[in-house]
Picture: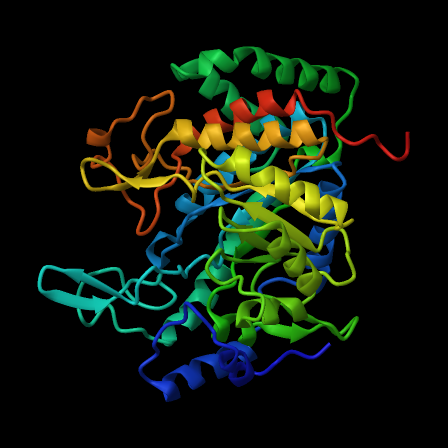
Length: 452
């Protein structure tokens, strides 16, 4: 399968792209990216697609999480380890509750670009280009920082490579050992004021691990974890340059990540992003917000997954807590009636953002939980499988989302508000989310094992 040229993609009306001021510098950066080794391999993408096929069939659950927008300065061993740790902790709890495998997908090693509602930002009498993520320009509100710099695309590659090297070392080098991860959760339950509520589930997991040890069961899966990378495929120059032809099959793969998705603002059926992702063989996702219709979803599935291959396409819904129960049922029913093989995943973050009384962009933890609960309720009512969660989170104790067991208030946001874009759940809120979702998962019946 061939892929269109960059010129052909831009001719289709590419939206949410930077206004690069220096075409020669952009060409140089793209040429450099075309020559670098892949960040991931086609075979790894195929392995993830197989796992997502299990999610589609109701035989697995997806946990996708990480930063709203990564920054270059945060690519340190401590930061990567903290994000990985909280995702592993969440996955252990969800695995036990769901009684199915949990597919772990990091929103990392490439999440450096963000769509914006405006090309410019004004503060007082000064108007500058909007910050579009470290992949494009700097966060500081200065004329020099805000000029789009194509060399940053090469820095995205270098920092993504460093992040993936760290992740691979952690998940294969003992850091992901199941018993160690469970010990972290036990510490959370014992030491956190909100953790006491989840003591019963933690004790059940502890008994299960003790039983496995008693009978001498010590499989290799206890000591390592499969982990894959993902990001929004927003910047066409970067994604196009990182698309390569697989020597095994002759098919194109975007080797910047195992999984890439199309955002709510770039999912135009005749747009450049849908066109590019329709040509690659990675597993892909599409964000569907409250303006999405069942006809939209069916048309997107026809373009992006014409062979109706399980594991190829994931719909990530982001309706908002107040709209999920009204908007989601029609999508699921009509997509199901059309016989389409898709995984349904809930993004409870992006539909619940508002500005606090203190001027910070934030989210209420209770709204996040409400949307997830609505997602589960809709699927339970329709007899379909709630396939997973897509969450913006960090392993640090930031103060960016209000509410939760810590009862963070608007006035607390200024303590550690570190996100350069959207607010993230902190470590404690993320673990609380995992335990609450575990309760919801325990009420859902997974698909029967075809081997049984």
